[in-house]
Amino acid sequence: MILHDPTPNCTDESAGAALLHYALGTLSHEKMQFEEHLIECAGCQHELDKHRTTLAAMSSNRPELLDNLRKRSDRVRVARKQMYVLSTAALAVAACVIALLVWPKKQDNVVVVPTAGDSSLVDKDTVSVESELTNDSLMVPPHTPPSIAHLAVFAPLAYSPINVRAAETDARSIFREGMERYQVGQFAEALIELKRAHEADTTDTEIGLFTGVTAGITGKIDLARSVLAQALRQNPRPARVAQLKWYLAQVAIARDDRKAAMTLLDDLAAGESAYRTDAKDMASKLARE
Ligand SMILES: [Zn+2]
Image 1: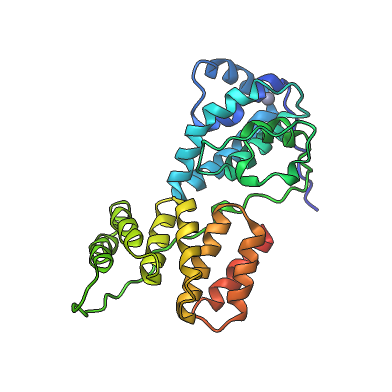
Image 2: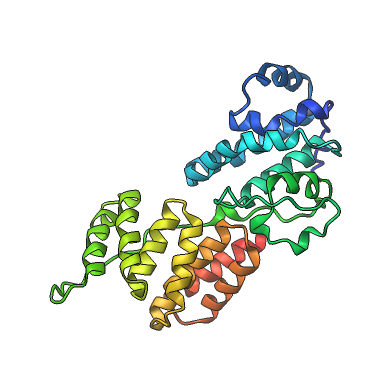
């Protein structure tokens, strides 16, 4: 039988609170102070190891997510000053990571949730990091499921252009330019054209699909979600529906929305599309997380 060492606790929670920012490299003037603490705190050494693994995985798979974490790190530090109770630094850091991962791309719709309010009544999209930390961080149960956001896979979808040049619409001509960029892997540039093509014709589900895929690849998850969902509402043919649902599932995973992801994946796994096996595999991957 293998006995695991018990996870050591932080010896100074006020110092340990800086851990995530240290791991992200966003700690400036408090850095030396935290390092002095780190030398003697087994709890923080242990936590730091865990976060470094997560952050390293994130930076290789989702560099844009890590950048967002870094940018938002400063805001969280401000929020943290408002906290007055912390059970353990580990708990706070876990809550902090969760809060950062569910933090929506839109940063302007910050809503302050009443402290005594029921946070389950509030749309996850509009909960601020401040409220997540002041309310939820104190109530995170030990069995809180880990974030699934790192499992999202936005692989470029193969594109075969149709060589029908007659009666090409404006939207189609912009789309073709965008897809030339897409095919050589210039996704950020492609997205500019694809967004224009989509705006020119929101009913073209192929344009919607590739705009959504490219938005997902470039980390614009909210845009991916709205464009893909809009294309799905156009009642496209079954093969297109499956493609849209697959990428919407990746969007749900990236947003850490397990329920929506599982619904889409179960649906694909039960169907006859090309995504059937991939959907089954991904659903069982999510179930294991
Ligand atoms: Zn510590």
